[in-house]
Amino acid sequence: MFNNTHFPRAKKFWYMGKLYKWNHPNIHVMSHALHYGTSVFEGIRAYKTSKGPAVFRLPEHVDRFFHSASILSMEVPYSKEEIIEAIKSVIKENKFESAYIRPLLFYSFGNLGLVPKFSPVELTIGAWKWGAYLGEKTEKGANVYISPWKRIHHSQLKMTAKLGGVYVQSTICGMEARSLGYDEAVFLNLEGNIAEGPGENIFIIKEGVLKTNDKTESVLEGITRASVLEMAKNLGIETRIEPMTKEDFLEADEIFFTGTAVEIAPVIRVADGSNPQVEKKEYTIGSGKVGGITQKLAKTFNDAVRGNIKEYEKWLSHVYD
Ligand SMILES: Cc1ncc(COP(=O)(O)O)c(C=O)c1O
Image (cartoon, rainbow, N blue to C red):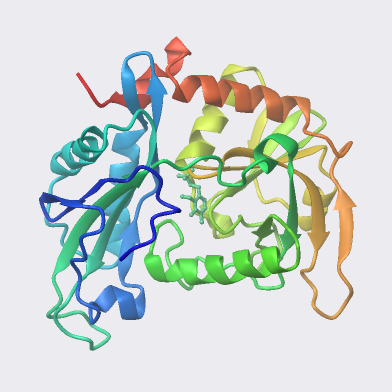
């Protein structure tokens, strides 16, 4: 019934307290979230370590999940501790050594007025094997497209929340970038500065200084972003949090994306399609090869998430005690 090509090795998912076989259908097609995007979600990764699978920054992800739920006035039907245990049970039941984990809270079946007064909030958690989000470009460097569509502004919606409906913009612009032959989109914000990717934060490096923006620039301040900032400081790299102009971006020595799905992915070419009135222009970033600071941070991150760096073990929640 379902083609599971893009959900490798997923055998069971969790839904309202029970585990179901992956192919078990259990929501009504008139569910509120399906019509209006009234859901909130998390993207979390578990990595293989010498002590079995460990979830990266699990409490922080669950805290953000509750923050997102509060923006949609959802009463979460489970406690944070119960959700943490449920996530671990999904990894155990599927016998994953590493996985991408997707908890979702959504207004379910009840009514289809825009206000989900009679639609209960339900929780489901799925997990599967998901490799590098940008495939081989994670090693080689991505070719990105600055979209003409400006990121939804923080004065319009709370961009610190992972609201299902907000991702319609990410999907449309991600599809547009790919249809034009690029690997990923980049959003400017309404101020005209660099905001973020459809599901990624952005860092730039100029003359050895690492820079990223924050929520005042209409971005989701990612958990990977916070981890990279901490690792960079510990490596003695100067970091700054401030707006990044489009010129800062195009003239950077190095650029990379961060995010749970994308992990750390370098950007080596940029096409500026931000002004639909003029022909888009293409730029090479730095030498056109993955830069040294990006490589250093990516290596540190990849070691940290696998439990190979003692000072970052604090970020891991082991699935088997
Ligand atoms: C819009 C957006 N920005 C940034 C990020 C990066 O956040 P994190 O590192 O917490 O995954 C994500 C992914 O969750 C995202 O969807």
